[in-house]
Image: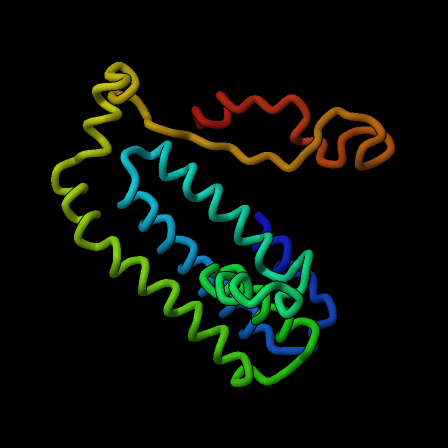
Length: 193
């Protein structure tokens, strides 16, 4: 969500952009790939999907703290400056600022691009053998099947993201919900179609 909130104004709504739209899209693509690579790593080193989600949540929280959004990286102690380079969001944010605010040519952002590529490749290389073994043995699926066998036969997960808040007066707007079709949605009827 955060990624699209940062990129959408420059790509979709045509906000003033000092750099290159392709550079902004490249930074988003590389960030998504690096984030997915870390997700694969967390799944491969954890004992369950729940544990992998815990690792991912902690990683994301620390990533935002060390990315330079709230406190500049150059003001951090040296060890934290080095540690901040291990998080894909740090490099995405740098590349994003380079292209949206600073307007510098994309080749000056090669450090961030290279770091994002490496942060995509390295976690996959680290987790490849373990993940291959887990998937061949169905380790995660067997654990879920043993824990909740009746639910295993059904659809495992379904998610629905709704822009909100809904039917709450005075929080984001005056009057009714800003997206009227989302008031009292009949999700089951939509899914049956």
